[in-house]
Length: 184
Image 1: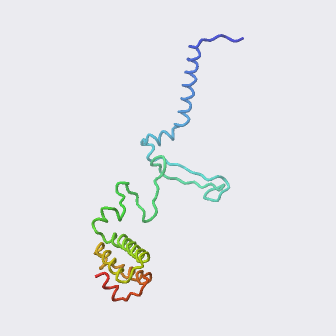
Image 2 (image 1 turned 60 degrees about the vertical axis):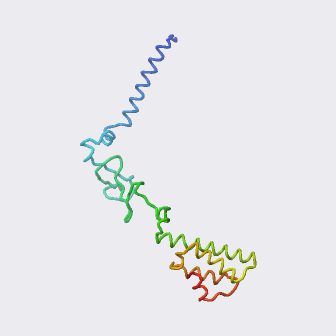
Image 3 (image 1 turned 135 degrees about the horizontal axis):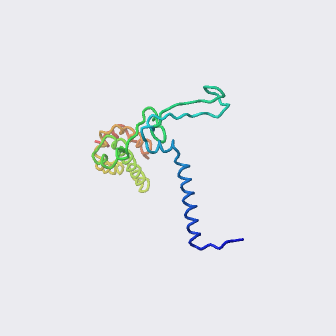
């Protein structure tokens, strides 16, 4: 036979059962060894943790069990970084070749930024010469504009590569003396 119960009886029973359930879950996940690790008490600093391999695997001891002791300093042991690597904060991270360094005229920017820029200008000069059927005199006139736009190119260590590019792609013959005079 079923006994009638009120809504108040239902809510009290649901509350009591919920409290019992959550208390059980809390106690299950917060056993003594977990509480020692979380609280970091005096017992947690020197606590020894034993790990074992499954039986049958090779290792020290009988039955293939490998026992290993180490002191627990927190939830996990500290990670040992590979040789030559260090851990730094993100605020300490700097990239080379940033806009501030580029404006200051650093050697790094000259080597990576100046040569490709001049090379693009030279390609544009060759495109104009091909489109307009330009002559050698037109080439030297346009190259004077490039040289004025990039005055530091005359003392750049990558100038021989630019000269080789010009010699290989020019629609006319250019001597070594003309190439040297081109950048002065």
